[in-house]
Amino acid sequence: MQKRKVDEFFGRLAAADPEPKTELEYGNPYTLLVAVVLSAQATDVGVNRATGPLFRLVDTPQKMLDLGEERLREFIKTIGLFNTKAKNVIALSRILVEQYGGQVPADRDVLETLPGVGRKTANVVMNVAFGQPTIAVDTHIFRVANRTGLAAGKTPLAVEEKLERAVPARWRLHAHHWLILHGRYVCQARKPRCPDCTVRDLCAYKAKTV
Image (cartoon, rainbow, N blue to C red):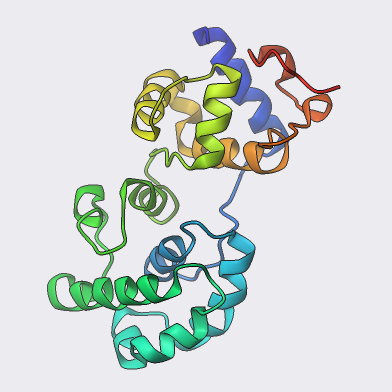
């Protein structure tokens, strides 16, 4: 997509939603990190339903360790892969306590070394908790970037790198959320809502719905 069109693309998304926010509920960088780890292959709604009661009791790595893996599993058992996620949350909490003073480090490379934390999760935390202009490519962003021609790529990393080059600096901070929300509610996988799309005329998708 041409640079002029990319700028217009994000300008329209910004006009519709100037301050987009994550739909995951959290209270601090640590609870955000836990929520994003739990959200892998799960919906934000489902994660919020489980973490609401959990985060009323636990909001630090030490409190999570005090809770323990068995009790954590009870809180998150409605979330897919909850056994593995519980192990990862306890493990990353222990590392945060033992190596980082109970704080979530504002460093993407360090975050990626934590159990259960991949590049997408690290990018979300860096963007939402620390205000860095990172772009976390999930299934929604991957679909929107390829379908529209905004930043076509065969892998999430390829799409991320193209978006980082293509998105103008003034839109970079919120680009991640604009694209996720657009993919979640408008440019949906099975039947995109093209008649409701604010960037329809900028989109390269040939099989637009009517």
